[in-house]
Image (cartoon, rainbow, N blue to C red):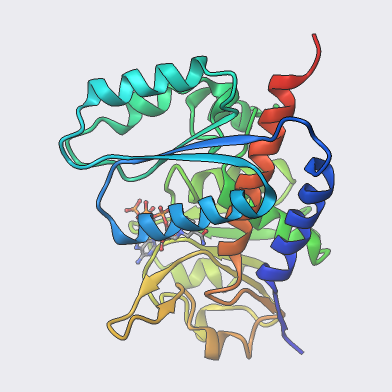
Length: 282
Ligand code: NAP
């Protein structure tokens, strides 16, 4: 019987643990979010991050900008947020408007407030298998999901499809740190099927609907679908041909309801961890 991995339930568990840990705090963890794009999906993601903060009693402040925002204005805001002791986590919702320099903004965030784990110091720490101040939320959520289902990663053949800095690469790094044997595939990879057919675990993060077909999956492999694509009908689908692949896989995540909820839960966890870091006595 194929197990459909329940990301919503797993995320709820993370959230309820956080609720217990934070309910009696005098001061609450606080998240600042910068929204400087006009991408409808980003607006939905930011709204759900705000809702989750509210639900947990965390403070959240969203800075929304129209396309007249200048790089200098954002730089000034990041400096102010870095200096503000009432802000524990700073999140810059990507992508930014095209005229803005994303990397410069990310690098200005205090790494101890870099709640998304995108700052080069946090990325470097992850690569060195040292503890970053924060680990990127989606990759962290994927590992938590696998562990929640007692999936052993040691020595497993894992293929991660997609090499973005925010999902694919850090997921591959975390899996390597967990002693899996990782192949990182991308759009230039030759014969993807040959690689996926030999994988014990497939993690797909491309945004290409139904890229992963049943004939690309080894019997009883574990399939984690990170991708989100909107069909013309408005329906959200993943990278995996779920209906057919579920007959071959032993475990599979649905879209929606798989990796997505874990991303927000891990964002809340990161906000709390940075809050603790900043409030610990010297
Ligand atoms: P991205 O920056 O666009 O990266 C996509 C990656 O997929 C690239 O590395 C690209 O290769 C690779 N790729 C594209 N087509 C491919 C193909 N046919 N075969 C193999 N590899 C291919 O996207 P991202 O930000 O990493 O996000 C990936 C997907 O995850 C998107 O659908 C996004 O919406 C979703 N996402 C979900 C969550 C969540 O919480 N569930 C969070 C973040 C992102 P090249 O590098 O060669 O171009």
